[in-house]
Image 1 (cartoon, protein in one colour):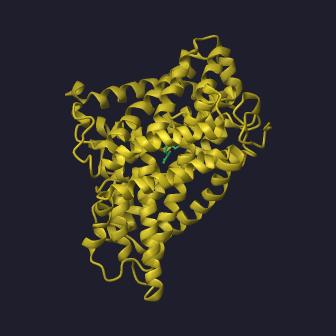
Image 2 (cartoon, rainbow, N blue to C red):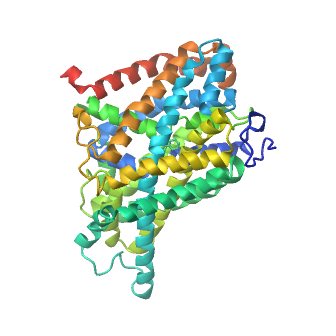
Image 3 (cartoon, rainbow, N blue to C red):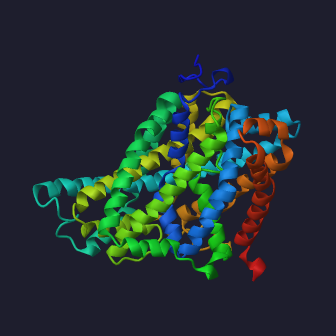
Length: 483
Ligand code: TRP
């Protein structure tokens, strides 16, 4: 039987609840879950599509005033309950003498994590593809001119054709999706301290080293000033636009891994000596820093190559490879860049698989290995639809009946419904539960806050979060309401 600090494949029973081997491991794993495709692929795309400055300003507002208080709320539910997200929420409800129906906040989160996992692995598959492309290119460059850019001798159209060619190949897309899901499964099946933690503790520092290197390189060789201007130039007329607000809110939830049961699940593996408030601050701070820096890493390169900032999701997979052609050591930088993205994606996908698997383990008392295989298998099947949405099912518009989302393909529909509805909804329930329903002494004893910060946190969770979340959800989902 597993004990705290060590975990085995049998750590599904409550007595054997696994733990992180240190506070560092907890913080790294949580940062690993937060930092991922959301920061590197989704944030620049959303910022670009929503006009830069206003989006970034509102994004930071959401992170600080809504994200951080909820991050602490989720981790404390987890640590108090010490079980899967749903079970932990039930325990807090029971210990507060209120209905265990409040655990729906975690149920919605588990569902959200599952859907995100399904398309996350598809996008991570594209990353694997580009790792392969740049590795091949680097091998070619080694025989010739390494200091030159990537894709020597090819014209821009050929590089731009890489992504459409990949999208047109359903077998390739699904195979890469399967490969990535299998790697994710491997680590989750090994357990908390010998799988999940190992990935985080090794890959996250590697990620940070690569990331800082490439950002500094981009700052010196790219159009840095233009990027700063784009990301931070304040355009007030866009700021309170419901579309921009909902996008920024959804992005904040997605990026911080909030509303998706994860912070509850990981909080449950944290020891009593972990200061949750402080850890939340570090996790939220690191995630936001990486998102902003990702913008400062990608946009200088994109602007220097004279490409379009509003290219959306194609930014990372089309604009950047084109830009790498013009950069000294382009093949090497390209390979390192996509490897780094792959590492960040893996630490997140491991977390995405852990949250629903942990629920299954506790709910149906199945072993960790079985639970993880079931969830990964189901998410793989669900993800196939997202992958085929680029070729065989290209005409399918799942939300055609919903005016604001009618044009979205399968992957974007799942992404939008989870990011803009499920995650904020889970967040709203969490805020009401922690702010109003749960026993106050229990909460105060768990959160590591005192005095003024305690009051401030309580105000944000009980008042600001519910009001802002409700307003944005209503305005964003039913844009017709305000004409
Ligand atoms: N935060 C992750 C990213 O930025 C995505 C994500 C959302 C996530 N919810 C999650 C990851 C839950 C792990 C668990 O890429």
